[in-house]
Every structure is written in structure tokens, then in C-alpha cells.
Length: 99
Image (tube, rainbow, N blue to C red; front, top):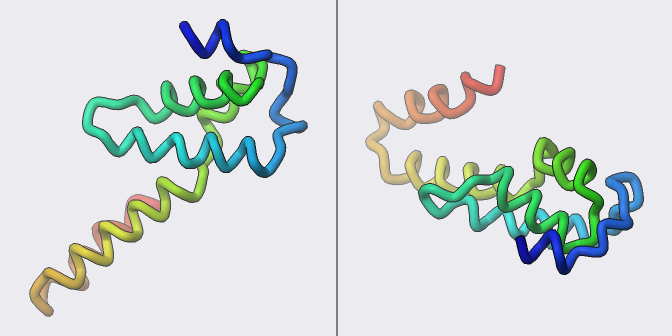
């Protein structure tokens, strides 16, 4: 509700600046908290950055690199802590869903 009132809602997704995209991307880190909606966080951050409602919704479907980086970090931790025979299974399990 606050994002709706504070956001200027004048910018569309094509006019998004690098700084604004970084704010939205970093806000997605909050979605790593269990029970937090990635799309909700992204839409709220987009509204705070001045995106109009349609552009904020569209930004929620965009894949920002910070979520990917968090997933890669977690995968590396799992692989490094796994025994040798389970490392390949962890890697295949992480990569297979992307195809």
C-alpha cells in the first residue's frame, strides 16, 4: 500500500535505469526469506522505483541475476560439503531442471 502511494508510477520498463534495476534486483534477495513472495517483493520494489503498475508486474517475471547468484552460491556450498560420490548427483539435480 505504501509503495502504491509513494511510487510516482511514471516510468515504464523500457525506461528503467541501471540503478533502478539494481535496486529491484537487490530487493529480490528478500525473497530468500521463507514465505516471502519473489514477485511481491519485485513488484513492490518496482513501484518504489517509480514504475507504473504494468511495468512493475512485468519486472516480476524478469530474472534478475541476484537470485541466480544466490542459487549458484548454495549449489557450490552443497557440492563442497557433499561426499565425492554425491557431488555429481547434486550438480545434475541442480542443472537438469533448467533444460
